[in-house]
Amino acid sequence: MTKVQLNAVRKQFGAFVAIENIDLDIESGELVALLGPSGCGKTTTLRMIAGLERPSAGAILFDGKDVSEQPVQDRNVGMVFQRYALFPHMTVEKNVTFGLSVRGTPREEIGARLEEILDVVQLTQFRHRFPAQLSGGQMQRVAIARTLITKPSVLMMDEPLANLDTKLRGEMRRFIRDLQQRFGITTIFVTHDQVEAMELADRVAVIFNGHLAQYDAPAKLYQQPASLDVADFMGASNIVPGRMKSDDLVETAIGEIRVAPRAGFETGKDVQVMLRGEAVDLLTDPPAQGGVAGRVVARDFFGASVNYSVDCGTHQITVSEQARRLVDVGTSVRLNIDPERVWLL
Amino acid sequence: MAKKFNIALSSRLSPFQKFYLLVIAGFILGPFIPLVIQSFAFRWAWPDLLPGTWWLEQREKAMAPLAWDYVLSPYSRVWEATVNTVFIGTIVTAICLAICLPAARVLAREKFRGKSAFEFFLSLPLIVPEAAIGIALLMMFIRLGLAGSYVGIILAHLIPTIPYMVRMLTAVYQGLGRDFEEQAMILGANRWQVLRLVTLPMLLPGVVAGALFTFLVSTNIFLLTFFLGQGQIVTLPTLLFSKIAGGTLDASAAGITLIVTLPGIILLIISERFIKEEAFGKGFGN
Image (cartoon, rainbow over all chains, first blue to last red; front, side, top):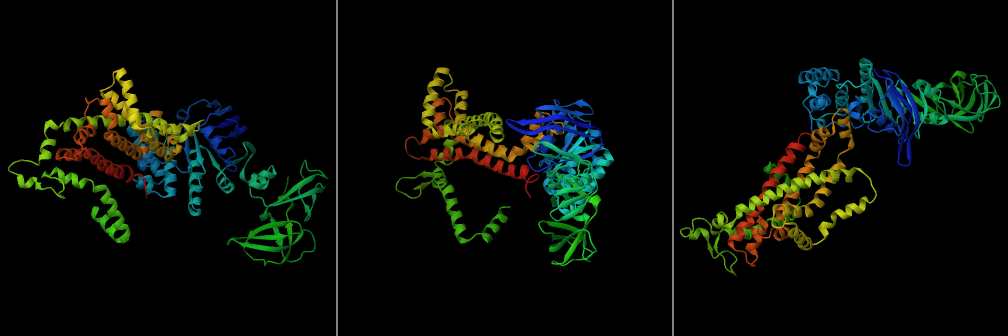
């Protein structure tokens, strides 16, 4: 159980600034994702926490103690690399016990902890295999076991679900979550995939160009992004510019949209209106009034869900709903939007 | 294993491919045929295509084939030359590895100013004629008292072997991601443990190939050994040269030539099995 803090951490490679003054507090036992496009500095941040890179300025604290200058071997962290980095010339057993044997742990203790951890990751029957003889999911479990057996104070993972197929992804997600809760270990992982971040993390730190753009719970990040960039990165497709007509009504190019009043958004202010596709109701029976008029121009069927592109004049709005019914392309519709689910930027 | 290989060969190759393989085999093995014949001849005079008298026909006069009788006797100095060759080759390979492993690591992973110029510079010893290097070195070594010593020869052998070794190991290092070493460090391994338990075993196939190549180059160097050995240190190539310098290939020279190829063949077989079974068979591949 370790609390991790980054205080004004900065990292420079020559003239290139990879990370610009990041402050980040990760609570003990929390599962946090560092999310951002490739090259944004999230991997550098992770490597600094691990001790593989030294910050150019600022401090990294574990439980309030500055570890910035501590070499990686003494930091007692764990890292699962994206491609697992299992030692190809060692069996599963040798891979898992590597950390303990280089630290000079007594043989009996290594044996006992090996049995325990192999049981946890359900790899007992594969103990004598070489990494090349394992599937992707098994390799990842070996990598996790190899790290957990050393009882690290912080666990780090680089794109933990990226190399797995859809079915395995769900399985590993639950597995990682269970393990993390069971050991109560502070876990930080890096990803460029917002779905991966949301499905796994307690809190997500979005990083753009070396700056921390937002640090919040996944639901908040998804529904109430702090900036247009974050909204865009979180996959928001319906963003329409407009102007506040009153404190609960916005005039936009597609019509008037009713919103929940919010501080800082006074009458006359130019705003961006973000509508989440699943928060919009598609009404086919012409209602008396209200809502935004439009026409369905495209339909994408995904089995369980279906996405409609609705042409509302100057903008197309994407509406997503459960596939309980199918609305034909060309149908005139009205969009009904819950004011509480409209987000202003 | 060999049988399986043959079956696979005959069933999958077109006649043209088989013919091509045969031609290549002929090029490689062809030169050995006259040597083998010569070493078992009693008399082989020009212009006969085959020896006029074979050793078998003259068994009562000679207990063993003449060539082999001489080669295996102490007078030929073949044993002394073999020991020298293997000894020098082993030391050269070890020193070469110790120099080239760190160098290759830097060349494969770091970027620095003038790197490409440096890489070109590394190949220069392969471009400058060996005779020029040899004469220049001899002048210096005579003054330093290294001429005619093992140290002198070993130093000279490092000149043509280092460029090859650095290049091979650089390629090997490029194939080894940093992940593995970083992972080992995170797990608590110190630098020596990382090198011994992770880096070296993973580099092993490449290191063995590089070492083998270096050893073979070293055991085949004639000119540098000849100049710097000053006739006091006999290796297989210099011994052979003294036999064929007259311009004829007599029976004893043929025997020595065959002996000269032995260390290389033995090493090739060992390393072939070693690389396949130990390093690749279990950990890498499929």
